[in-house]
Image (tube, rainbow, N blue to C red; front, side, top):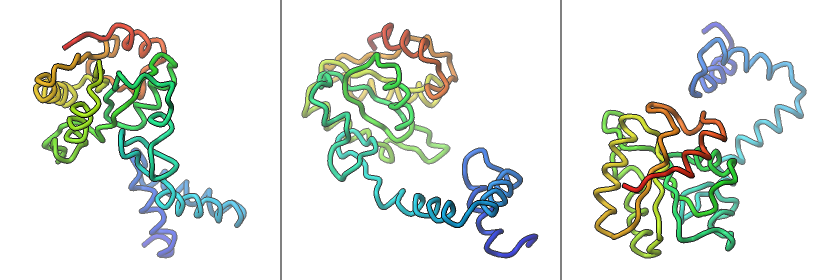
Length: 199
């Protein structure tokens, strides 16, 4: 080991984050070592609270402040006749940032990718099917990233849900093939929402 065990273990923990290698992890740790004790304590408390005080909405699988419905699902001003299906919670927040969509959401938790171990039963697809059967929305918007796995997920959902006689639409292809909703600008996302197409 190059450093004492405590430092090495923290470097290892940071290096497990996406896009963070050993050198970046070392910089994080050395930066923290220069911070006042109160800052480190606050940082540690925030990490401890992350799991203890973060809940998942039982309806849409967004983050929630409580064990009940999230702010979006509780909001009676939202259009409950529309459900926008996204891969990740981050995608939901990006779409919310456009102020263009006013319906509800459903977070799949990823997309079908057997090589990565993501099969339909590891996602919230069954819950989505149950929700559609129960709530009978007018429209289901599939806001899934347009890459190979995303296209496969879209085809799977279409085959599964079309027999329920529901209007299924896709975001317009203002989003490039292989692109991520997370990195799309507001104008592109607005156009994609407005120009969505029916499957």
